[in-house]
Amino acid sequence: MPLLWPVMIVVGLTGGLASGKTTVARLFQQCGAELIDADQVARTVVQPGRAAWKDIVAAFGKEMLHDDRTLNREALAAKVFRHPRKLKLLTNIMHPRVAREQARITKAITKQHPDAVIIYEAALLIEANAYQRMDRVIVVTSDQRTQIARACERDGMSRREALARIRGQLPMRDKKRFADILIDGTLPLAQLHNLVHQLYGDLLAQAQQQTHESRKHQKSRI
Image (cartoon, rainbow, N blue to C red):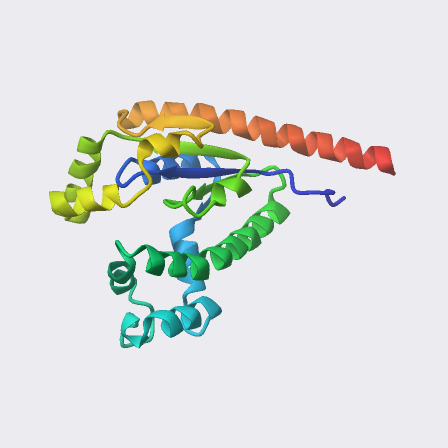
């Protein structure tokens, strides 16, 4: 019997540069959560020929493309970085398409697993107002020194580059205000695993309870 409405729980997961967000996302996935990566969704919506791709080329020029016509994301990022108007234009092109693709993927997951816990990992969850579509918001925190050290080691950034990227993001203190749950991304991996495992268990229990209540409601209407 089909459910009257989706009863999965969608959790927005965000954090600052190199705060540990992706590590936490992978730990949730290991526990059994379904993972949607906003960055991968964004790559999908800008494939050559798609509407977002056409709008970006029209707005920023063909120099934003590689020789194979795929989007040069690094060139585009450099073009909009520190240019609020250009960034807003790109945001207006991208975010509605990303939202629709996320909704499509969520619907497909829910069809197979009505009581799924879905983790939506997105660096710009708050900036893009995507947090408004979430049932819960998790913010992974880190001190700036750790962020810089990780970014330099992981991504080969210079200290100046890492600091500029951090300053270009919404400050951590502001991200925290949107959080239902805060996770310290500097915790040892074993401790992070235990914390995520407990959180996943709580979220799964809530999703299963919602599924149970939805089915009871359906039966009462028959």
